[in-house]
Amino acid sequence: MTTKMMQKVIVFIIIIAIAIFLNFQFDIVDNYDIERLSEFNDWIQGWGWLAPVLFVLIYGFAQVIFLPNPFFMIGAGLAFGPILGMGVIIVGFSLGASLSFLIARYLAKGTVEYWLEKRDIATNFNQWFDQHGYRLLIMTRSIPIVPINLQNYAYGLTEISFFTYVTLSIISTMPKIIFLAGISGLFIEVRFKGIFEEHLLALLGILSLVLAMYFIIYKFFWIEKVEFE
Image 1 (cartoon, helix red, strand yellow):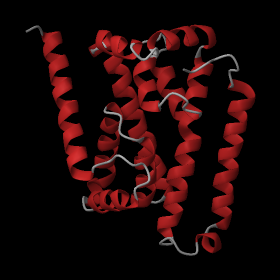
Image 2 (tube, rainbow, N blue to C red; image 1 turned 45 degrees about the horizontal axis):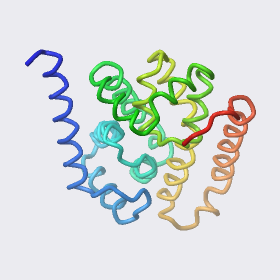
Image 3 (cartoon, rainbow, N blue to C red; image 1 turned 135 degrees about the vertical axis):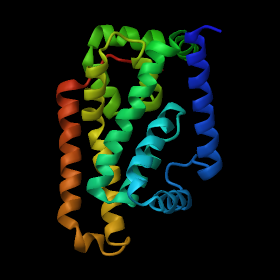
Image 4 (cartoon, rainbow, N blue to C red; image 1 turned 180 degrees about the horizontal axis):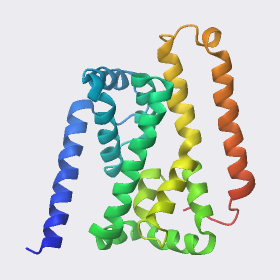
């Protein structure tokens, strides 16, 4: 077995092992399952000062195996509060987006291309990127008509540079991160009671910021002619 093939086998085994562990431990299927969120929150906080690091690693690999992003974005806010929660999500999202991108570009390009082509995604994404460049990334990240975890692999097959991909992915996903992690973090700070009395200005600030960011994306980066099947 060649070294390159061995690398692919190792990556595949690691991904399967993580998928089995996360599914067995938390059965993460529903983004907004309160019971699962509570169980995950209790488990992650039990790790003490290691909790943020462990969360980042789990969330990063969770994207590789297509576990739902909102579950972790909400979970980060509940576990760490609004500020640290958003920070943890940004790092974890960057890790997951990078891993999937690099797998598609370097480790399993042929397999990923064949798999996405069966869903009419690979060719479409290459054509759309050739036509619209980074604007396509900004739009599809902020308004994920194509699932974000699927995009991570699809962009690995385009000509976009790794640095541009990661940077613009973080920036254009920020509205969703701020909304889900920020608001869930505020809820946990007041134990789900009196949030409007305690954090009304913070809530209004978060909503205003998210709406402003989406308005900018729609105004300057929206692409009218892209059709998603």
